[in-house]
Image (tube, rainbow, N blue to C red; front, side):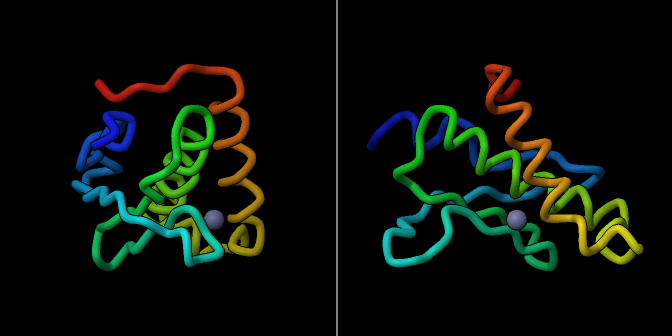
Length: 100
Ligand SMILES: [Zn+2]
């Protein structure tokens, strides 16, 4: 197994919830990651690595965070994708992110 696959571990704490992280092959999908708030689960494509892995990981974590903060139900909702993506890009392009 590629050690990069588990770079961010199998769970992450987001605003009082323990969110599971699963690394599965998404070659047949048109996305590299997904976030299910109800299932408290983030799925990442198992072939991602480096900056792209960080970017997708943060992107999905921010979606979960938005939901926990109820921002996905506010007037900001149409802008969630833009905000989530902007933060994920900014951090992944400028910082080395690693789990504690
Ligand atoms: Zn998104």
